[in-house]
Image (cartoon, rainbow, N blue to C red; front, top):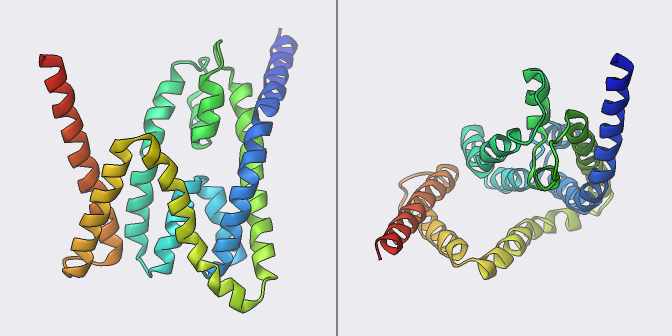
Length: 240
């Protein structure tokens, strides 16, 4: 009986590895770019790899790099990345409904590996998701992200110093590239970005708070306002 269970787990893990191949391939260029930008932002190889090992969240790591460049403090960076990643609570709770019953310590481990992509692959699986399957997906995706981050740093270290310094502008270009397609798809996203930019500018140029806390406050205030407007709008539609 134990041998049969072990074979099922191995089979589920192999299927998970197969499901994670496309994610690993997609992560490679993003992680390479992150590693390169981390080098040009002044991080060491150890710091670059540790961030990928511990955080494992592309948007948050790019956000952290931009805040490093601004000289932002640790608390502000932690708060901002927490806000960016808060959606992972909802994704983990949703995925838990599809997962097979297992030990909590196992759930805690694979919950760490939940990203937009790993969640999408697991959540769209028609049947109950086996623990081995989700571990297979995350193992390949996580390995790709960490290894390619280190490779990107190594590539960045070989670039001329002048080119390394000029690469800082690509960080802002990256955020614009991520934001514009989302704004085209959703008016809500566009309003959120515009409102956050206005709040951030007001907080910084009025001297009310530093750049780091201004980003945190602008993100919170704009999100709350947009959600309130959305709730009022939906409530009005229901009344009609």
